[in-house]
Length: 276
Image 1 (cartoon, helix red, strand yellow):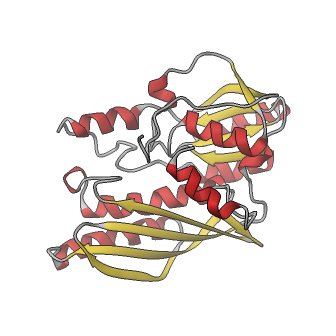
Image 2 (cartoon, rainbow, N blue to C red):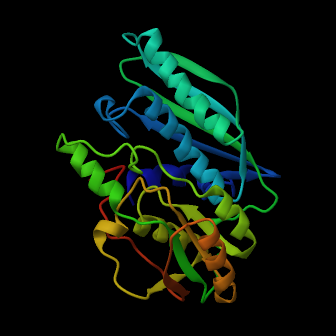
């Protein structure tokens, strides 16, 4: 068991709210993500505006995956003392731009001084029907949106000192919110792909107590690529045509790659958070 799983396990026995992209309490969903310098990004890779935008988007992605619409945000920002007012305006611009796009009101948070830029965002969302990781049924089809692997490739380029496109998903994740809200009534289980397809499948396998039968082999460069923020979900095969029709309407690429079977699934990718 890695350090992340071990630490989370210390709290799981005390509550049933832990184990999904957010915690569901009544009609509300609470999600939180950290976005830390030298862990999730380097300053030379992104502008202040881009950093703030991604910090918001990766958290909104969790809300969407749970079929929840973001309403409020709390921001905690640790700011290096050498940052200028111009830097802070650019940072604020990024937060406000995404908040406006998704109809979110920023209602508070905290700021502290620090030696590097660290951001923590809490998103409070509303849902009529939350979708959890534990809802996969035997014979469900498994599907993910978009194309995987580009974020891993772009991250490798950045580590080599090369430039990547401003349109890269590593810089600005593309969230398919409207599409997912439309298909939500057909979806049994879902989550977003933040640590890689194979990692997320292992999490879903544990929560739903199922294994997966792949229709064809998926390359490790695709299955282990993190920072994708595409949607991973399961559904009954009788809804396949309806979901594909909505995907065409919203111009969302779909990849139906496996079905749920008896058993369990284990990921063989290197852990992104804690490397032994």
